[in-house]
Image (cartoon, rainbow over all chains, first blue to last red; front, side):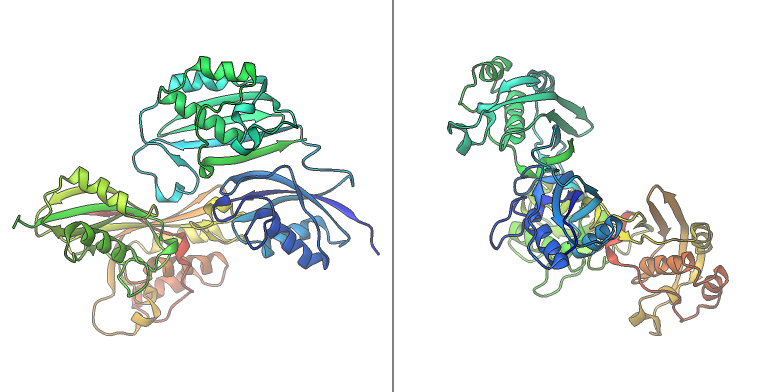
Length: 250
Length: 250
């Protein structure tokens, strides 16, 4: 039997028509779609590990995943074969053979996400799957200042998913290396790079920034929650369609 | 009864999930979708005229249409109401009240289309609905030169839809004001502006340009068909997904 090879892939996907990354019975997911086509090539089930789960509807420019196969196919051919078998809303942009111990989640050093808010009255149909539409006035300068407050190491409990917020257990402390909101014509782009993210954390940060933009929440409220590790959320979860996983660093 | 008002609208749409412009029983079409929501506002059926039909899967940046209603709603409110009722893949970008005689098809002086060919090996998932993927070598300079040959008044019978090519009847002579292929990073954009277009004409022109790019057809072949009004097609019809109606001039 040929030896097991550890394969690292980078992939980009339009998450609109998937129920997120993680395998779910009878629902299309990114992980499930990858596992099905790799099994069809390898002849046996092959688990695929990702750098982390993306929620239903969230997109990726460069997600990282890995799996182990015995098939001796050269990596360039493997990439072409995968893209032939995958639906066009998932594309493998890079394939390489790596150390057998490589794990895309445990070895990740940093991740970057971007959230796109579209502000003009009419969303072009060609962008509708990739932005959150918010055509109302916003205090953008307050949002920009608040975004910077999240940089550094904080207890992000107030920004965790509701079903995760009250759990004891794992630490909710994360390090955010940069957190910046940029104002562009007709849109806002929020980009955040951190050591790791809690479930719904980026969408909840954007929800808070929007509340700040509406004047409903002050910078002091946000800072206090970060400093005290408050469990009280400050805003709603922004919709998945505006969120992109931009990249993972190792 | 309030007087009839002639309403001119501009609209943009992602044609991917529609069976073209024209009403068809039990199939989603742009015209059918517009007529349904206008009927829901007006209380009676209202025919909607377009500047021309777009095929199934063809997109529009600025299609023009018109209809007549008695509803006295201000045009700004009408635009908002239509966008609330329409699916997000169709957006009304402009509404105005015009002369009762205005007809978007008969009054059109020129139309512009663009066709997008994506040449790199991997189509980003976010563009897959809006380009034709052709990741193979092409003689781009020959294609650029051939595109210019189409400018002027010609008999475009060889570029008509197959089911229309042998019909006697209406003239197949059209005037093309400009016809240019532009080479961009990873892609080609073909833009054509003319007095009017035959069914499938732009997609057939692109099919011919691709045959020229592959070295299967020479410029002399194309010129001869234009000069003689030949009924013999020179290439296949390029897929609808790459085609955009860019604008209509009056």
